[in-house]
Length: 338
Ligand code: DAH
Image (cartoon, rainbow, N blue to C red; front, side, top):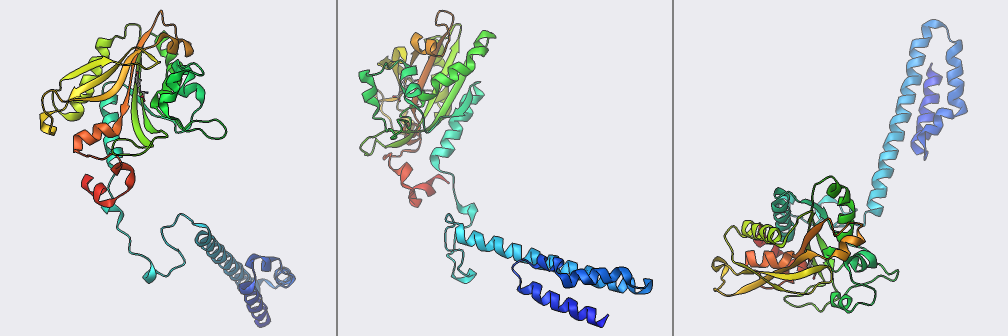
């Protein structure tokens, strides 16, 4: 028994030094011990068996410890997203703010309010894509190839010809196609898409290369401009929490006919004077060609659509004078929106 204990101690010492401690379970010396077990007289078996089992358990524990060390070692080596070098000991690490002192970005927070208002009106809400193609960005929206209105959108393009969309209208064709069946069941398509859009523009207090839009699409057998104005008024009055004066004026967008700009009178509570109009979005009745591109019969169905910038809405609500604050990541701006 004594020599068995010695053999086991030697095997454990080798296991501690081995890359894979479990290899020692296949070692000829250990195999011999296992063979010896079989030939032992019955009264010795329990003690001997216990020694072997303890050996196995120790080997397993060593293997587990090695695996855990390897796992944590590889995290330290590859975690390029960590906010500091994870090899630093605790005392030398930078002091970070507790998570609960962070705040939601004002655009994220306001966007969820916007989505909430429209979903309560019965609209479904989907996030707009951040990469699309020429068909969805232009062709499906009745901008034929080479159409001069394409130039108004200052689009970026990847070398492969993909487009980071310059407006959330890029979602319209998909929404219309997906909703066709609903129309045929006698229901309406009622959908908003929200998200980031991109334009190759010089940045100033009212222009950003990256901003947010919210787009709405409604199609039914009897959709009308009157319904559209009611939806938009309802939205703005709920968002600003007060009654508003609204007006429209004609505007050109290839995907609507008629096309309109929708304005609200700047509320006195937000520093507005009577007669001070703010243009909030573009809208109109969906052009028959846009319905046709989505395989929807414009003789049977009609729709309205609108699209506008989220920043403008939020700037008015919070008296923010410079659009660039939103993307700047400056803490003294962000902390105002606790
Ligand atoms: N996509 C337009 C833009 O970004 C805005 C717009 C105008 C959207 C009219 C619409 C619409 O859905 O009907 O300039």
